[in-house]
Amino acid sequence: MLDPMKKAGHKAENHKPSYFVRNLSIVIGLVLIWRGIWHLLDIAEATLGANAAIAAIVGIVLGIALLYVPDHDLKEIQKL
Image (cartoon, rainbow, N blue to C red; front, side, top):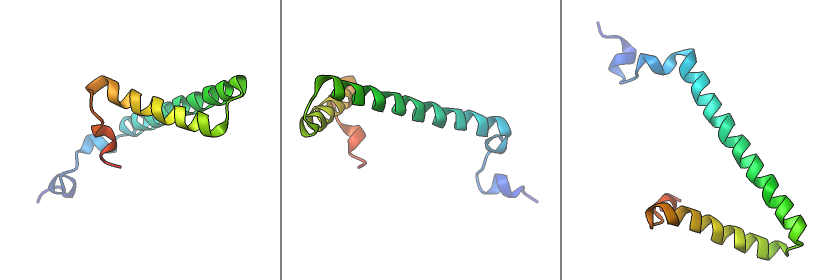
C-alpha cells in the first residue's frame, strides 16, 4: 500500500522540524525588515516635516520604481 503522504504529492521533508524553523525564520526576518523600513520612513517624514499626502505619493512612486528597475517591467504587481 502506498504511503498517503506520497500519494498526495507531499514530500516528507516538508514536515521536518528544520523545515518549519527555516520557514519561520524567513517570515520573522521579512517582518523585521518591514518594521525597520517602516520606522525609517516615519523618521524621514518627521525630520522633513512633510505633508502626509506628499509622503504617501512619494512612497508609492519609490515603491513602483523599486519594482520596475530590476526587470524593467511591473509583472510583480499584476497579481494584485
